[in-house]
Length: 71
Image (cartoon, rainbow, N blue to C red; front, side):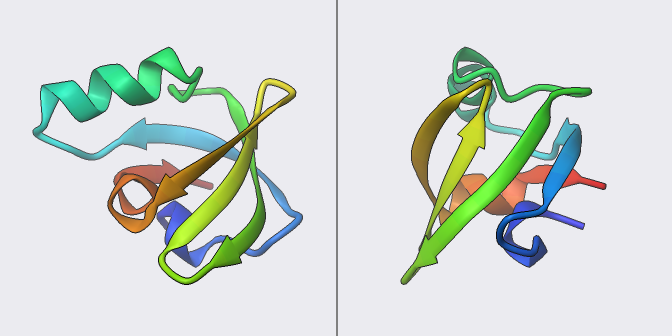
């Protein structure tokens, strides 16, 4: 399942990043978004998600959220 289907307030573990775009992959890695890391969807507004990664909150768009695979 990707992050767009995640339930708000539930902590998930990132299984991987599904993208062929190396720039997007590098950007997500710089946020601390990589396999084995916990992530929580704090809220959703329009096509954006506010996520919590490593005690920081980020607003990411639907394209980034759909590339993050969680379980």
